[in-house]
Length: 130
Image (cartoon, rainbow, N blue to C red):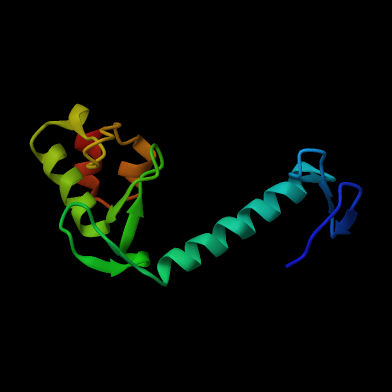
């Protein structure tokens, strides 16, 4: 285990790490591009880790590897791709476009256009949705 003292400062590529007086790590980047690169790398690593583990779909209750799940961008809940796509298709087919919500019982945030349009729906369904 590494320990740092308040005055410890060291550089890593295009950023500086420092321990502040509250004992928290502060990271300063030379540019927003540098921050964005580190953020994207971290998100990619987190997604790879998620994809290699089994998770339970809260709709069908199946346990599947993470790469079989779809994350909703409005609330970060996730469901297996088959279930969330079927839910969206059912809602659109039945004319309930304004009632497409997250399937998490405690959430119920509406799905956004980006999520719906990135599900690979048939052109006819997308047109009906719009």
